Length: 579
Image (tube, rainbow, N blue to C red; front, side, top):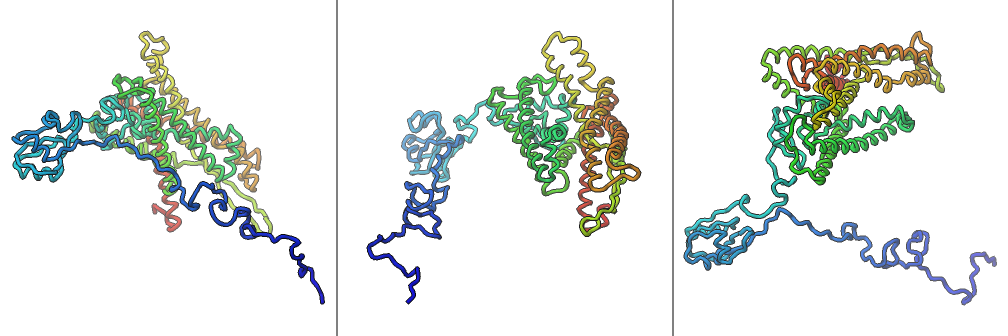
């Protein structure tokens, strides 16, 4: 007989039998040494906790409810009690009930229909139940309610409190009703709004981007301007900071990270700009030439609430813009700016007609249409540099051999140079504004006030024009890198006919770019000077519709949106949008 190894067994009693305590291949140690039942056998569950699968929202302690500050506590009086206190009938009011001890003074009274009433009484109270009204009328009396305005109890926020109910702001000339920031005196702001729009400057620019909401101190007063500023700053920092430049070269993932940085910087700039605007509003320097109090209360709590509301408004606009970009057509931020600019366009034209008459109005329309046609022509103009790609053998396939072009727009910088120049020229006006309280200002302050505040002086126009030329070349040199373009062309086998790849291509692109930027800079300077010229000739305000940033935004965004729509339609119908 053959004995195998697994047939061997220890002698009885030589080793005690092992007891299984939950160990095994399937348990993976979660109940090892703990048994198999009860809370002590469960993994990472406190022994004091009962009901191992109870949801988290049932485990949490119940929160105390909040106290409604607008709840009204009534003193209750029954009809049988009124019949006992006033058996002779007559007039029964709150004061009579207080005099006979039925209720306490200073708290609203409600009459209930409990019991019977045998006499005719004229009862006046704050509230009545339906049965009480019926029984009083059946007895030949009357029930008069004092109403909510005469309740006599204190609501949160008395007169002058920033959260107290205020008069609703009057609708603007284009039918929109602004929603003010808490703590703003809407009446005084409306009185100062018209004269403030005449001053222009950087506030006029920001007011354009906010659709007229800045100078009315609404919840969307900052508008999209913090996002635009943050985007410009990030574009400039990409050239300076190597980390951002590396993110830009990573493609979509790097661009997503830069977008996230832009959001954070937008909120920081919104807090900074909101704090500055609230500080100017507290010192009555926001609306130039107006000495009325713009805020009901200028304490720190009110200022903090206003800054939070302004920042939240900017965050909502930024979210809406990104939502339009994700689900709509074109750039959502550009479309929001377009709507904010167009919202003030009809009202500005109609104001020009009312102040200057039909002849100036018709002439402005004709000149404006001609300016729009010229802007469209320049915006569409571009220099196409031909590029050819040599044939390449990659594996067993042939690539290349195609020809394309590099489109260099005449207006390569957009409206950024105008924004830079306007922001820089506001600094002299800011210096003058800080010296308004000085009875004997220095001579140089008076000289700056005469030449650099209103904007209709020839020296102001000349400096503005030269700054636009400078910032156009500066911004184009940052956003378009000929060295990078030449390296990419050389990497993929591309070359410009007649120009060698590498350094000669870079020099040629610099040569073309420097010469094509000059007409673009002159074009931006002329368009930006149109409101200033209109201010001098027809005494219009700086929000003149056909010119400046407003016209550039309207035409540029409209052209981009039409291109986006046409590209979407060409995916289904090759004939396009406009045949």
